[in-house]
Length: 278
Ligand SMILES: C[S@@+](CC[C@H](N)C(=O)[O-])C[C@H]1O[C@@H](n2cnc3c(N)ncnc32)[C@H](O)[C@@H]1O
Image (tube, rainbow, N blue to C red; front, top):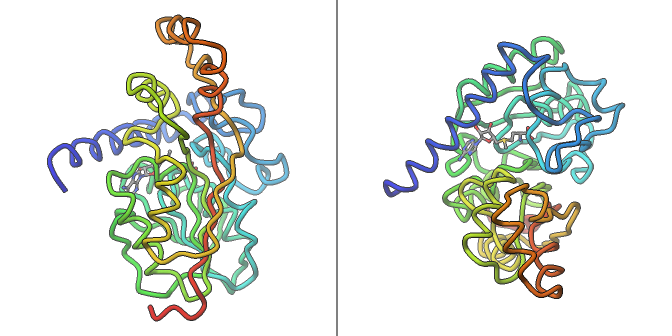
């Protein structure tokens, strides 16, 4: 990891440590995000009202995802699930209830404050099959072939080494295991300044992948049956940046129409082949 990657990772850590502390100190007034009535264009309304009754308020308040990986994961009783970048724990706590006491849900996160929040949420819920472990998603602290389903919610875009994340995911999955991830993706050529402003607004500090690059990295890691589908588009006009809006208005309509569909949340699915050696 070079110096700039280390700085980016530290910026990511500090950002999420601050969010976790806000929720730990005062859940009622924390400015985020994922409750069912939130109008936040990225994190709002991702979970059903019935799902939100299954987690503590602090887990819902701290939800910073951009999709709902549980809706993709089709979890079964007894399975082992791993959430990459588990934050306040919402997806791990929902997964733990779906897989039941015979199953297990792990959350990996590098930010101590988020781990403290997630563990407090698990204790409130009294779930015994959820475990939050400190670690980097680029070097997962779990054995080879030990997980049935890997989920993640708006975290892979934050990594400075997305290839390593996908290789590690492949390693820890059992043959036949599945990846079911929500993430931000970009499409097509985008002016660099526009890209950075929208990505920062969406929260992609390290930069989102282009769809074809995502597919290439998944295939290079060994995955098959790869699908990447849009679930929500982010319009650069929503960023509320006067300069950016003026620039967009100066562009021809066909280009604005393309850019309106250039930044999106995706459901990313892939499978580790059943006959895989690892
Ligand atoms: C956008 S939040 C998402 C949290 C959670 N998935 C959710 O949906 O609420 C990103 C989380 O990923 C963690 N994270 C970011 N990069 C990471 C990395 N390289 N390794 C481990 N955790 C990371 C952050 O600490 C933070 O808790």
